Image (cartoon, rainbow, N blue to C red; front, side, top):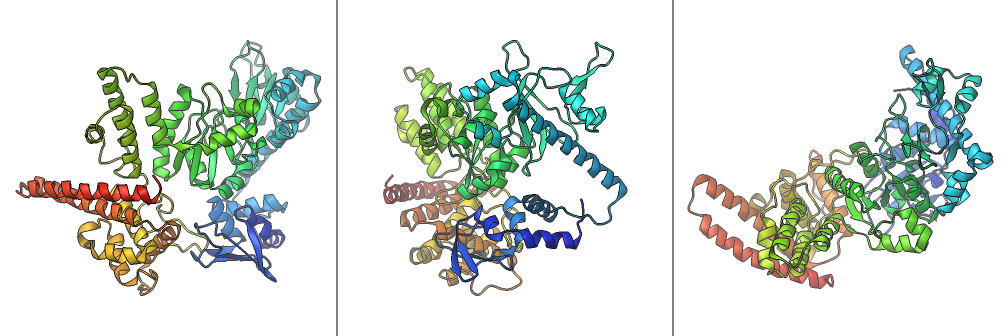
Length: 610
């Protein structure tokens, strides 16, 4: 990893416009002669508690105690280390960084990479000029503009055209001092086996989409054929020293600030889909770069925003991508929703045919991925026969298996009951038969999937994360219950008095949080021991979450009943394992508690107008 001189760091700090930098993440307003304030980009809040001092280049949040300077701000908003933050800011401000004495081997590797990046950037610029200045590219221009893409949008993404000649890039690059070896290393040239090893351009007579990293450095290309007989239709750069297939998202360099500000990212399949959405004002859109969704791409999405809207085609490949997204997102605590697209249409076609308003409506109609998948099974199934309904139930068991008991599962069970004309109790029993105990965690009623990760620092780089990276379903319920108690202190005090922390809480930190809150519900941060950062961190998280909750006594009661149901389930399992005769009595208690749970759930629905 490169080390830069202190003078370089200070130059970057001096030239950064801190107001402009922070404004890309949150709206700021003047709060004094030399101060600005806005909503904190590190936690959700309804009133501004985040302030910056633009002259000293410092920030502080009175809500979550996030604090730091220009470098920590980029580290935490971009989820990068200090060196990457410094490089991003230097790129942004046009400052050339000076390196301290460097290991010779590492210096040589860096020099090689920088040469390859320079070659790729020169080639991308050449392709872009060809698109707009070459008579041969007329057909490419006609195709792109015919898809409703404007010239300024295409230029923003540096879309280009590779001429049909065999050696344009090869010859120009060699003339500029680059070697054949470097052309091979970037995937721009290849060698013929049939003609004495003749070297020639790999990309010819194709529309060229530069593939860049989050810093905007060109790493490779996606190339689309123009002729019907040209195969393959899409030809991408192969893995090499600077480009790794599936490690990046198309348009991420242009979308990341907009996604962070919006709190959500739109994920498309095609290059033109992304460009069309940006043109229509949805500048938080990114694309898959022609690959199946990978863990690296999901990691990139998680760093951009907590919510992902899937604008994927409704064909088999799109459905497969959604299923893979659900599996990978569960590990990253990403919230997934699906943008319903007309059959056979992709985002670019929808924008071209019906305008930006059509895609805006589709985004407004986005539904949680679980509901989308259930609706698809119900829409495609045979409702006219018992066998058809049974087949649908079998499919639906698989779809609902990963959902915990909670609002979403209950709502979807009700939908299945109504659409298949089954008694709700029968639908619950039938669908529950496929639910496993080790399902990926999802959001529980009133819960929130944000902020439950592993040791993840806020701006001050000291925020403790006491909960494990992937918490269990029970722990989510415990956390949601405590947050709701803080949000509604009067009812919350009664609810806390009605539970036994030793019996109802399985997570040690949350158990101690429940005990602490009995005495400090109105001020969770009061009375904390200095040597217990885990408890302080958990209470800080709960307080931030509580600030986002609406007072809903019915939901609080629902969560308390969930705690009691979970306690009874543990007691029943233990009784069965030990051969105790308590099982029948405990099962009867569970029936009674479930009845109370259903009543509380109905009340919660009434409170929300459901």
